Length: 153
Image 1: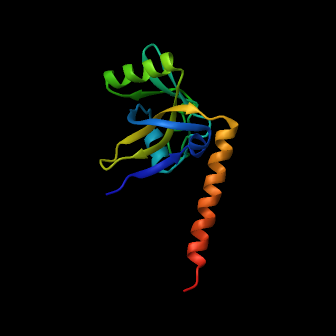
Image 2: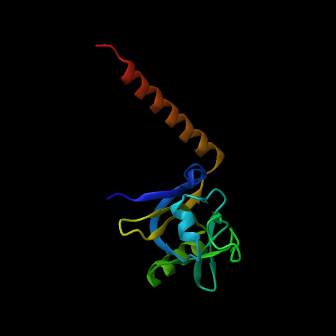
């Protein structure tokens, strides 16, 4: 059984060079799990930050469902705590504060056991010339694949 991807941060791979990936649990409140199952999430401007020694997912948008309780509507962009092992948190903290790297969320998904998870990565920001080189390589690869596909025997 494969994972069920809810939301992806496509811009993260464009703006950052991904160095190392981690899988983290996420603390959700109320009907947010139902909203995730309905794929009502967006990671476009999301980032991770340490607050009092804990890693939080900031600015991730999880919409409120109309079918959920109307009197309890949590903030859609509230910080959500990420669950990791203590050694992983210490490693991430050291990388961010010592090496000047950043932590970006890559996607929210449900794993094989139907538990909501967040894929996060330690990343280094790309410069403009790096982005141009990646775009050029991507274009050349796409053209080569197209030529192979359209080749006549």
